[in-house]
View 1 (tube, rainbow, N blue to C red):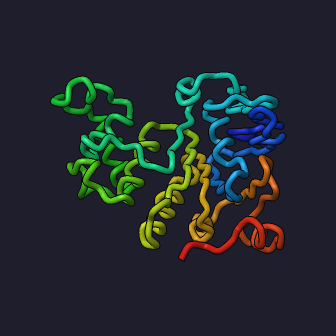
View 2: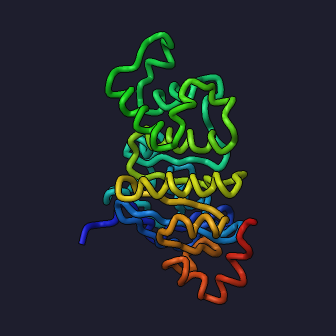
Length: 247
């Protein structure tokens, strides 16, 4: 059996006596899709911070491809193939959809000289990403003019365009309606097997649409994990952590 792509081994993050993570154990297989749910304060965002290098484990280690990345700076972790999308879109509003994706793909020349055309490889990568996120017809629109849902899709596309192997998506459907949420689930599902994806979200309808492995966090640790059906059948999870799906 192959080793997990990512492993958190007994990771504790202690903020002056408050354990935001408490001996957290979690592993992700390459090409998998995992949704992490749980109440506010369960440690979901701190877990992502520990993976990406924004906080350091007090105890334990984070392994990526078998390497301990717990003490590496954030830029070094990103360079190894991990990228995070935050809840609020971080697109470059003054640039076009195409230019945002070109910069994310690594063509930094766009930032220094906007009149320079991208090379064939960059253009092909951008075209592929535009098709993935469904924004082919919006390629020349300034990112600041996109709808909220389109900005979320653009940022997902920017994360994909970096070529990273592990995507951390923090509430990618925040502020979306039902149709946009369904489209977001389709985009993420299309990446399964090609990328490894960790999604944090509170929308159980959305988690059901994703159809991946579900992890329930509570008090900085994994409370249980399994399919959504298995999670829903647990009375403690159903009554305390899931609540009602968004309408």
